[in-house]
Image (tube, rainbow, N blue to C red; front, side, top):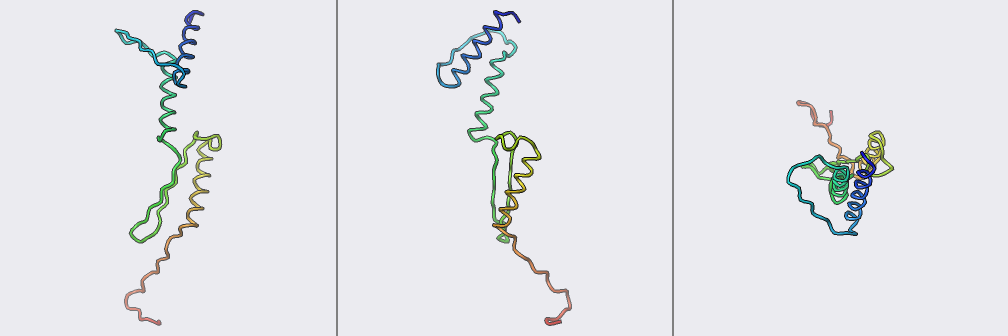
Length: 124
């Protein structure tokens, strides 16, 4: 890559960053034939993906639901990379276990007594 190409690419990246921050209006470029993606286009796609995640895509979540017996079913989802506190799978697993255990204490499962064996009489 020549110095001129590098500076043109750098300027394009800066312009794209300003556009994404809402500082400028987008420019429309019309080309007849397809071309390879530029670094700025890849960066734009990555930023849009991250923005979509932040706007309601993939996040940590907790789901509580009651089953037919009235017990609360707990689902905990902890994703890596959403924050600096959870950079690894191991950290996500530890956090999920912590939250699940806490919620399990808040919503204990009902105790089901085993039925008496057939032929047994009350008081045996």
